[in-house]
Image (cartoon, rainbow, N blue to C red; front, side):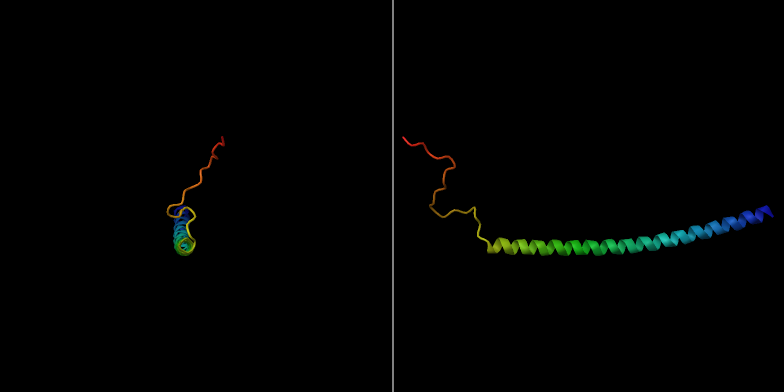
Length: 81
C-alpha cells in the first residue's frame, strides 16, 4: 500500500511541475511581448527626438560661424600705453 501512495504523490508532483512549467512558459511569452512593445516605443521616441533635433539644427543658424573677413575678438584685452 505504501508503494501505491508514493506513486500517487509522485504523479501529483509531476502534474504540478508540468502545470508550473506551463505557467512559466505563458508568463515568459507575455514578458517577451511586453519587452518588444517597450523596445518599439523607445525606438519611436528616439526617432522623433532625432527628427526634432535635426529640424532645430536646420532652422537655427550656427553661432560658431563667423562672417568672412571678420576678426574674432581676443579674450584678453590689450594693454594701453
